[in-house]
Image (cartoon, rainbow, N blue to C red):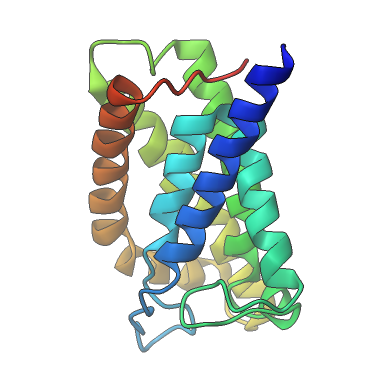
Length: 187
């Protein structure tokens, strides 16, 4: 990899990190029966994996989460600090860090990003993005809130309709961006 390619990838990584921060400006919608709101930032996680691949997508999300851990109010609703990582949303945040690795690996192995059929890319985002994040988040929610695993998993059903819409928009946006801007996804 040349120095120019490295600079290009790091610039794109910084742009996606900034996008994650911007998506945090939109306040979360409280669900009511669980202490986890509906937010827009997980669409940025999907975009990080689709536009940057597993390595730089994870770097972008990791940088974003590091800023949150340092106390900067980058999470939805202006939250930040280490306390959010041990609170009810902590499992979702950890899953955000791992999701680009999982999605990027599946994109690479199935050649979904290069395929003419967008449905393969969408299916990976639905399963490896939404499914993975919701399951890991529910497991942590069950542990942290002294809630059973089954109720925690069932409570995540409230997120599914919005997540499916956000994932669909993320795929549409990523495909358009890749066609317009030279986003070269590294291996």
